[in-house]
Each structure stands twice: as structure tokens, then as C-alpha cells.
Image (tube, rainbow, N blue to C red; front, side):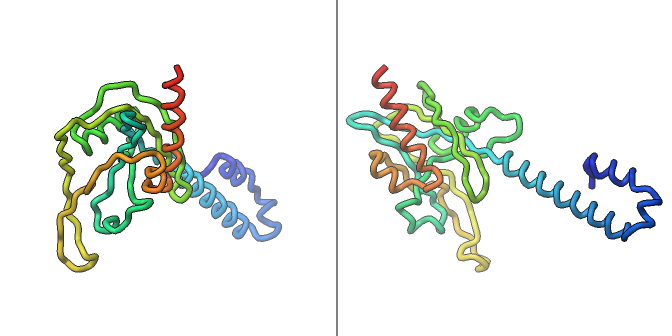
Length: 206
């Protein structure tokens, strides 16, 4: 374990005279334990800060503003409707551009990267995990005849059964008006609904 500089100095100044007073062993132990606690806390905070995901919200304005959400296909989500739809996001790796990661995630889910003006929606932080989610929005209307072909994965289901089944990463996609989208979307992403409404209102006035 790498000790903080203050602890190294404190131990270096721990003279024999000091050791003749009190309980030096317990004092050193307390110092080391405190250093370990501080180091662990800092590492945990660093890990929480480094958790960043990025995504892109597709929307259309004809005839009215509608937002494209996806529904996870995992069996744990199958019966969850309200609060169970999401904007797909991908984990940003160290040194990676968040918008590039968001574009790549969009292509993995939908099979394309739309052209257009990518509007920044800022970020939110999940309280439970400390993960930061950065979001953009771009206007795009899926063409007539578009076929959604999700990625499939295999998992043990039911849990501990020894049986494996295949499930789609996303089982359906749908455009919702803002009122519906607020009810459908995962609570941790709900703030982006209000933000895209504000951004679209500003761009229409410009």
C-alpha cells in the first residue's frame, strides 16, 4: 500500500522519546489504519468519478415532438413498462471522446449513425452508483419500412437453473410524445426529456 506523504512524515518524526510516552504501537496502528481508510475512500471516489456513460436521444418533430426510446429485452425488464424504457448509453473508456462513444452505441443498437446537428443535453449523475451520464440529441425520423434488428445475448434463466436462453438486448423501440416519455423512461434519465424540450424550443425560435 502506498502511504500518503503526511503519514510518511509523521512516522519519520516519530522519535524514540515519543516512543517512551504513551502507547507507540497503537499510535502507529491508528495512523496506518487512518491512512488505509483515507486511501480506500479516495480510490472509491475516483472510481465513482470515472464511471461515465454517453448516449444519443433521437427525436422527430413531425407532426409534433416525439422521442425515440428503447425497451431492454432482459427477462428482468419484460414486465416493466412505466420507468422501464431507456435511452441507450455506452460506458466511456479512459481517453475516449464521449460523443464518439455515444455514436458507436447508437450504431450498435440501431445499425446506423444519423447525420445532423447533435444538441448537447448536458449530464446527470445517478445517486446510487455515482455514474455520470452525458447525453446528446439529434433529429431523426426512422424511414418507412425500417426493421429493428436487436443484438441477442445468452444468459442463465431462470437464475441458478443451469439452463441458458437467448434474449434481445432491446426488445422494442417506440416514439413517444414528451408526456408519455416522462412516464416511460428510466427515472435516472428523466431529466433529459425536459432538456430536449427546452433545446428544441430554443432552436425553433432561432
